[in-house]
Length: 477
Ligand SMILES: [Zn+2]
Image (cartoon, rainbow, N blue to C red):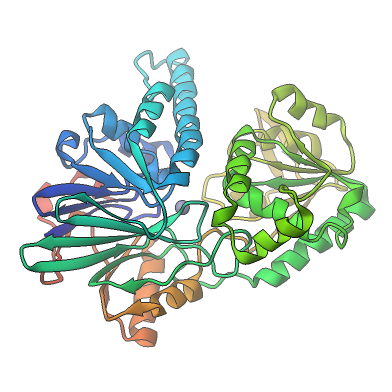
């Protein structure tokens, strides 16, 4: 009965942990490593196990850094079932398809530019085959998916369908409970429920993306958006919202509905300019049973969702291009969230040199992305091979993260029963160290930061260091 730490122990992408218990091998998540081309090449490295020997996977949520390597696992022989929340299956259909078609496009590009053997990690067809291996669960439903191993999903409040995973493992007379946080959302965020109470656990694997910091207060973030819209209206320009398709886009639309009159949104045309965000929104609005009380009340009073009349869903390319003709009065929500591709690039080209336009950056911007360059106040940027001067007004707003900050993580940890052995995963080194210190000081909780290849004996809660020579190349930083 042990868990081996594999991915996401040294970085924030590529989540994957291996449970060996009751004679079975189960993966918790199987995410894609994201970042530079060198980092992404790690996704092609062999797994430290034979995928055909994996009995089942439990998937916490749809984000690609948790789910994106599953089609590859299937390609290499995994034939078991992927247990996850039923809405995660719906979102994976969009996300994995998108991830596959990006990979296919990239491979075609490389084939034309000197790499005739370039192949995608997986194709759209293969991604869909993987989705067919998924089986849906509801929150709170307990399923003994292998003899001696049961799973129950709790609402993690991170994106629709996101879950923390509770595994009850029985070997002989001994039963141990392992809880894996997945990604945990913020308390009191729009639309989704707060993270559910943690409950009892013998061992807890907890994420720490923002374990070292506090987000800006949500209320002041919302007020800031309102002020920017007001100023932009006076400036007679457009507003660009580079946005993640799942979660952020729906939150923005919801906030627009809540503050429609106050922000004078009737003077604007709002565009959701992303086929993926449009599809994801349909799934979000369809699953009212997963919203919080406030969102349900909101729909009840308005009887519609999305909550604004002047919303244009521009799925087709021609519709998207038509927006370029608008010189003022357009609020454009488009991907990608970090401006490293997608339709937002076209909108930037048409608006970035105009001082009357406003660009609102609202999420984490990874190093090397155009979003990061903008946040760091680059005076010029390159878009599709041409240099543009940044003359539009730039705003960076905090407070809308899909990840809880340190206070959210602590609030969730306080809802535990008993004193679990805590393993800090899924965060950058600094965040993990800082979070460990905080847990020790504030909650008197002993926490460890496992390294890749380390194994935790679930019977004794002892952590055994990796045998250096079997550490997989993937694990080296
Ligand atoms: Zn996530």
